[in-house]
Amino acid sequence: MLRTLVAAGVRPRLLMRDPALHEGMLRTAMHLERPMPWVDPRDIAEVAAARLLAPWTRGGVQAVHGPRDLSFAEVADLLTGVLGRPVRAERIADDDLRAVLRGVGLGEAQVEAIVGMSAGLRDGFVAEQARTVATTTPSTLERWVTAHLRPLLPP
Image 1 (cartoon, rainbow, N blue to C red):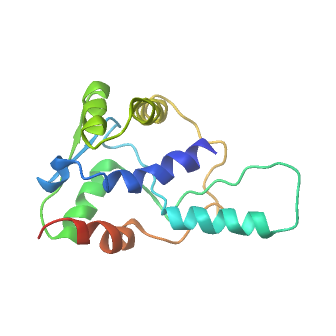
Image 2 (spheres, rainbow, N blue to C red):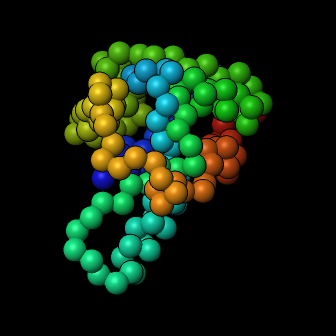
């Protein structure tokens, strides 16, 4: 469940209008070369709706991993291609991440939740469910960036 929630937050975090993204910098407290799932929130909603509408079963976890794992370095390259301008990934300290999140208007509880999730993922998190055909969803980060991020950034 945590992996789903964290992965769900990654794409919306690109929308937080961090001024650095406008300047071609993708800042993160994560390791730049460590791949992780990038999941479209719509895919999570579709999986959740399907589970809610299915016959009731007791408990269980349904991971949602997106179509492929990407490192922040790969995401910066992807953004460069889709946005048509250079984007570079930069690793920042947790305190710098806190400042970025406060700068985009998040409250302290939200800031600490995101920093805590980032630290947990960065420092040895192991997913409860491995990627399988059942946990892999179709929406690519390229498609999401084209539809949701590119229109918000100046040319």
